[in-house]
Image (cartoon, rainbow, N blue to C red; front, side, top):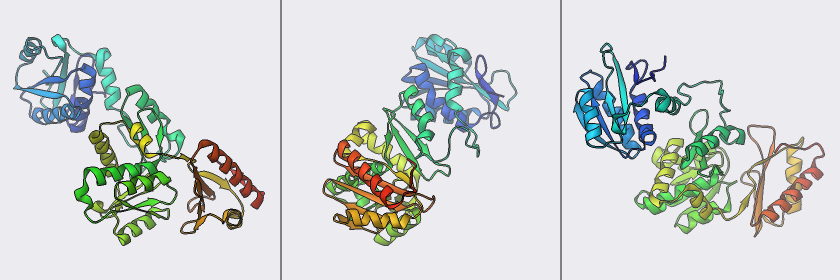
Length: 390
């Protein structure tokens, strides 16, 4: 049964709603009331101090201030709301219900009550966005790198006008970002953003450890941006086991992968989507700019993302590509990567699926298109059975 009633929020505290629910209500309440300061009072129930702490923590986290009226009668709170011209107030009480219940009576300016249609309905939608884990993944698949799995997040970013969106994978160790314009942010560029966190805003964490490892598939922009801040950028093979090993072996500061894994020496060289998210938010706050603006300053090239090819003889294809493009700077640390002055590409065998994966980058959109067509034709010439899987 929902605790969001016609006239108030009310239910068995600890069973039908809890600390987290109260925090989330508090977080969304200032926006709903358009209030910069909210008056909060409470009754004498044993759970009221905890509800107060949770509710006001959420309000404060939203950037709104709180005026604590302490234990008081509901009419006294109404009087203070009107007399001191508060745009919103909350009375923590379940009125006449038994002591195991608690609730919230929420008022707008003038002590006008907030009801279900006037606000609780919207508040319920915000608070109860997929509250229970569901292993069937009914909303979208667990892989945040697939565009179709980001559509609902993009829609929410647009509807709410948020600064960004973050999508975690099924076990919470990967994170992908959507900017405020609803554009997908390539995860390799977030590696550069994390460099800004360390080298500009927290240089005391760096000390003599300036080495940053980045996925071999990453844009050149990543190395250039980190190097410009005094970092030592070093590419490494794909895969979390290899990256963790190399980060520890090389004594690196942190590492980033195209899949949205980010690894931190201060986290015992393990990956953490939450730490990466906090650091990105910290950078945006300290820089005072949007995510799209920051990414535009980092990204200088045109990047293809991963393109999958289904072929029968992968090694034959890779050998053929090496023969055709071998005049460039060749690296075989993971698949085949060849650099030219104005563009580069890497083609490698997927370790998890039956594909060859191609990534390329160029200085212009036109050159990217030309080189992509050339490489596709070269793959076709090497293996007549290939299928471009996108």
